[in-house]
Length: 94
Image (cartoon, rainbow, N blue to C red; front, side, top):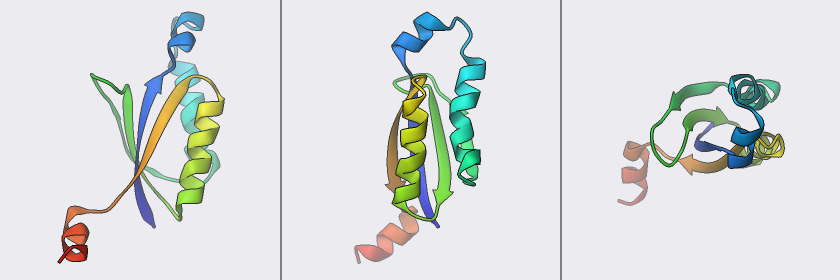
């Protein structure tokens, strides 16, 4: 399984439409469950992004599919990065 980090930001127009976005955010994040992908960690953050999720997926195609499904709901905007653990990366560059 490949490891990914997804950074999520609440869409500014969604903030204007929904005073409490809890339900809408939860619905958006259900894209992981619908695609049988387990989220390893989900964090709320203070800064550029509102949430960070780490998850494993069989391939990039599924990771991008999930990001597209989340983006299409109009509540969250995503950036998705494939990542490699540092120890593995160190071995690659030796």
